[in-house]
View (cartoon, rainbow, N blue to C red):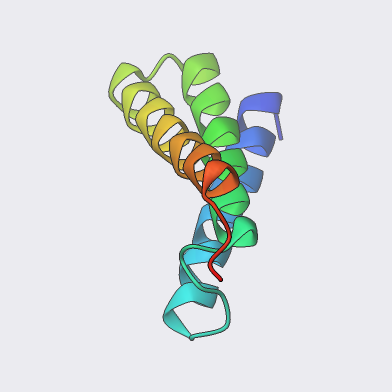
Length: 82
């Protein structure tokens, strides 16, 4: 197994784990764990796509990473509810 496949497998596994845990009600979509799993999974899948030379999936995973990171930033900046 080469580096691209290792990164892709780890990345997609993280994204799918977050999705499964969310659908099963075990992980809220606004939780740090869910957002981190998506961000890191997408970043790893993006790196894999770059190594494989797949432009469409690089764009998809880069966008997914960016959206997840923005959500993390917003969550971190949000004021705690009283």
